[in-house]
Amino acid sequence: MSNLLRDEIAGLKVAQLARDFGTPTYVYDAACITRRVAELSRFDVLRFAQKANSNLAILDLLRRHGVLLDSVSAGEVQRALLAGYPASGAPPPIVYTADVFDHESLELVATRGIAVNCGSQDMIEQYGARVPGGEITLRLNPGFGYGHSRKTNTGGEHSKHGIWHSELNQALARARRHGLRVTGLHIHIGSGADEGHLARVAAALERFALQIGPELQMISAGGGLPTPYREGDPVFDTDAYFAGLAAVRKGLAARFGHALSLETEPGRYLVAESGVLLSEVRAVKRSGQNTFVLLDAGFNTLARPAMYGSYHPMSLCPMTPGPRPEHEVVVGGPLCESGDIFTQQEGGFVAPRLLPEARVGDLLLIECAGAYGFTMSSNYNSRPLPAEVLIAEGRARCVRQRQSLDDMLRLEQVQV
Image (tube, rainbow, N blue to C red):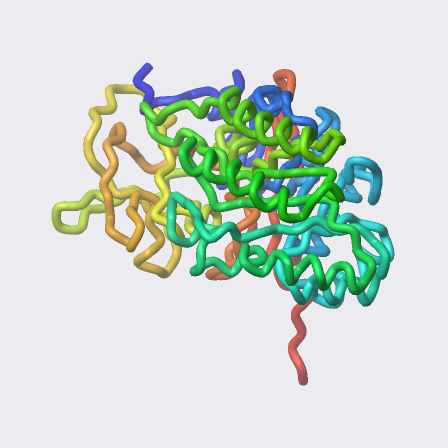
């Protein structure tokens, strides 16, 4: 079978999955996730950036494999608790990482004893006033960044994330005024960084750790590990990544006279390849030189191509027999937006894709969609959120029901 034709996901028939759960539906392969977890098992702490995929079943799967969580909102903290993570412990099962506290998140972390990773001076001030004498970690902006898109670059002077590196002493002084101990250092420069940029992170970690001093108990290089989306993309060398950071830790331990915990915080790397967005072809039409294949999924279902120009591999599952010659098509969705195109580059430029001939009723699979898929979905055009399905040990189960119109409208009122 051509790699552009596909009739199975994790050993189960695509057509049967569509009959059982409908479309559009996110389908995740649990075994793929656990393989990625195993690749990073040499780290002392593997902490999942749950903004990538916060389904409770996924969080529970990760918990059962020893993965801890990074949360960026009160809602994500609550999800972590519902998935069975305790509020506190050593190392912290849940860390709240952000650049601001809203009132709800500050109250939640204070009352539940959730560990906090501060990305701004004001966070230190507000937490210190609420929890004097506590512990915090600091997220620093090292002055450089990286990203597969400018919108995913989380370092450098154009990024809002982290405490600017030259303000580290100011942050330490602010923490001391409130009796806060700075026990951890976190640097995250963006998504999809290559080995060269990650080596710069390791060097920056060492420099800033020495500035903080022996109070430090943990260092984290953040996440952003590259994920292969295109055939031929290089496979990331996790052993070399660990070795570089382990060398930094060893040097710091010798200077400080005690061991340090080494963390990494992947999100996309653990779940992206596990996910497939299963959709149905609902129309095929021509506009000049372009053939459009239109699905029942749009950027309300998967926003990454419209937002970043992100590439996702695609394959077709035909519902009728016969040859399917390949030709270039533009794949789009049902939304009333010209930008509702899955085959585009950053900037909105349409990029036709070679696919087998598609017919109405065929199933189209958008692959490597396990990260920032459902979590970024919306009700735009009053379309319901999709279902989510997890395949584990040869069995598919629905881990999120498809949203109904009643679900969508439940909080709205008409005033008379």
